[in-house]
Image (cartoon, rainbow, N blue to C red; front, top):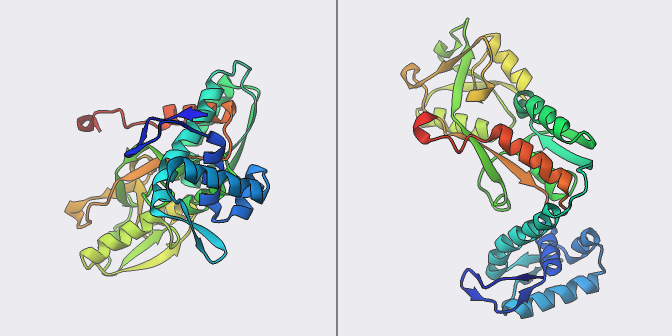
Length: 305
């Protein structure tokens, strides 16, 4: 049980039950009392009873029916923001007082370009500190990783952060400029129709690049499309196309194109950690700490970046 004095103007003089909040988050994630009951290992009637008690406790209706699905009301959306934080804080508090040696299994997801740049340091440091822990790594695009975390198939993921509904629990830990890049040995950027090598259609870097080119009415064509950063980089290095990459992803043989070259400034790339709300463990939190210490650059003064 957790005592809360005030939630966004709601005076809650009593106690909120973390088990009810965990069930509430599960329903919000899956849109169904039935699926949520399976995830929290309760009967559907027990889940329904928990939600009735939660609604009574806060004095607001938090669900409305939409066919066979359960949708959140406006008050439910407000509660969800706090419920996720409270459930995570409760799990972290228990883990902080567990003095047993860190061991176990943790599932980590990352896009392949982040894996190339960041995983060697993260895994080396984590392994030295936690030799009895096992890490399973899945490389996939950010949209896929978000789905895997929501489905409890990953414990933690390193993702490209874009503020969208359901992504509020992303914890941004690194910010880098997104840059136009070309081969240092070729001048493909001078072609009348600009050839591009970018990610798939749902890639946010691709969307930013195309929006910027459309904004200046620069004619372009997409020659290569891949989720694999190595494949995109190969097209750039071969002088076949230009692309967009975060600053830390620049490779030998690449050249940055700037506004003086006729290329508009792109938005920054934000890298975040996303954790599963389903369960927390000391080994997961230990890995998150190593990820954050390896990637964090937000404490650097702005003038020094």
